[in-house]
Length: 99
Picture 1 (cartoon, rainbow, N blue to C red):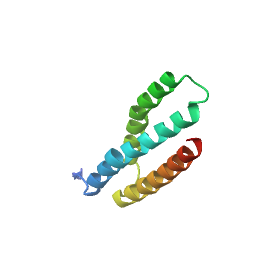
Picture 2: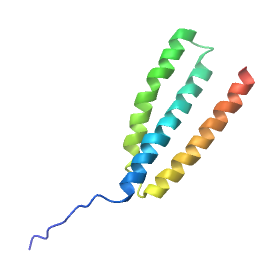
Picture 3: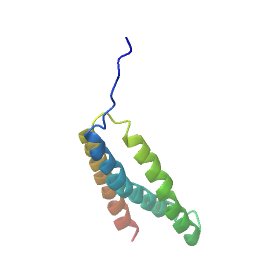
Picture 4: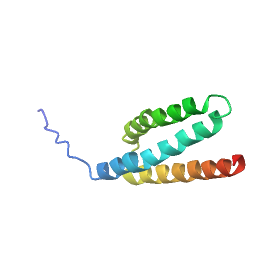
């Protein structure tokens, strides 16, 4: 009557972990740099640098956690590659304008 359900580790957990770990970290760094870039006019420079540095872990862990809610590993990789490209294009374009 009671059917045993075996939960196997799915093969796409590796790709989700890579997406959240590596690509999530690089995305968090880009977002933190954008916050520093936009916030440097409003806060003291030493404070905004610390804010940007301490923003990375909580962004990264949130993104890393959310990665496992994406149904497929390839989809997670695709989403984070596109998000990284967009974030770094914005970062380098705004950085070039402010320099």
